[in-house]
Amino acid sequence: MLEYLLSFIILIVILIAAYYTTVFVAKASGSSGKSKYMQVVDRLVIDKNTSIVIVDIDGTYQVLVIGENKIENLGVVDSLSEIPVEKKDFQDSFLKALSKKGLKNEE
Image (cartoon, rainbow, N blue to C red; front, side):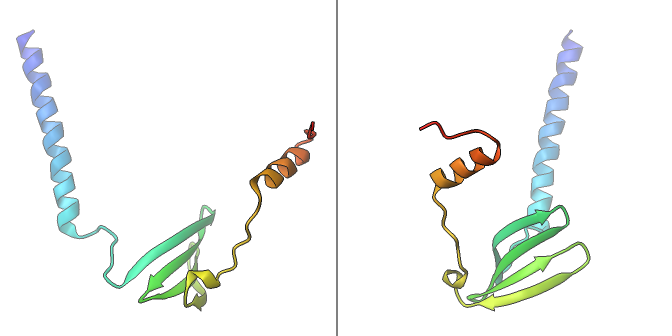
């Protein structure tokens, strides 16, 4: 019984050592994905192979489409306030979705 307990403790110590070694190697390799000059501001996944990404490069926002085999620049905006955003009322959207499902508003 003591032998099983000792084996279990050794296994736990090895797993903890492996975890901390992996964390240390990841930090030391510098593969954190961070950049001094660029930052991904927002990402919208269109499908499993396509995303629209807004990248801040020195205060200028690049709007990119990233596909499986290519990256396309849709344009440049100076600030995010230039991008039109349609604001919807939640209640109206919810009732519209219910009506599409065949449920009726019982008011």
